[in-house]
Length: 139
Image (cartoon, rainbow, N blue to C red; front, side, top):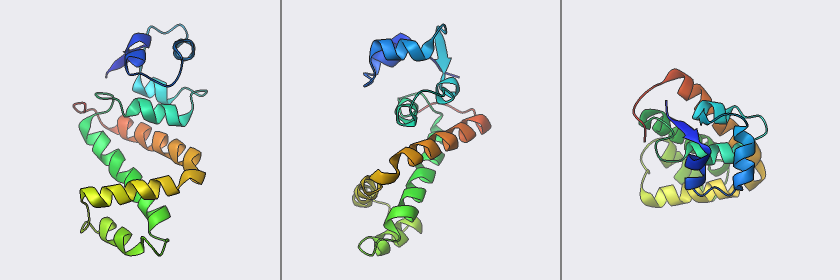
């Protein structure tokens, strides 16, 4: 399992300050992604950002996580909306998964701004579950 040092995290240009990053590491020289995901005071959006760094998550786990997140966002936000309902049905049944539809999915995700914190938390929980069940090559 990949481990991250303070220097590794800072090399990814996070929005958090070096002092904040060091504070999360405490006395640890390095942390695994699972340890980072379990930090109670680190906001979920920062955990998701960390998980999206190259090599942080096994390829197979990342694909499963991405599919779960997109499916939930489309089902929750695009499917009930009349203007995106038909597209959402096609995306969910697999007949409309193109770059254009990915852009629409991103739009649906932006429409979910009010539920953002809960969504990040759910993403972190899903990723933790997938990581606990899988150990494969990294993205």
